[in-house]
Length: 145
Image 1 (spheres, helix red, strand yellow):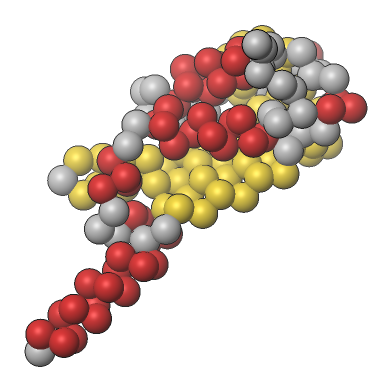
Image 2 (tube, rainbow, N blue to C red):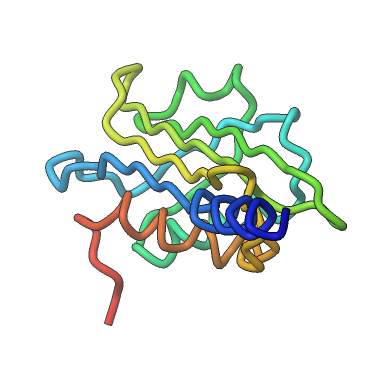
């Protein structure tokens, strides 16, 4: 019985990894402004401010627009973010898609496998989880010195 419990706990710990899949925006895109299309289904209050700050860190202005106003933007970012619960809520999955005139030019996904399992990092802030993802997505746009 004890052996089964130890094996189960080990499997939970091992399978609770963070998965990040990023297809960076090419430097040839020459993006200096992006319109973030508001997603009212995302209820994580800090998510959009973290996105705006992340783009600003790379010298890219970001404005939040409604889907009807997005047509006037050269670059649009659509997103989804999901929360999970374990004592309190935490970010468990997020996707970012950047389109240039309707054609996808960048993609990023953050995902906690097994909803984080026993890892204490699952309760980390949205900023601590998404900043590295945004930095990888915008790797062609160097951080200002």
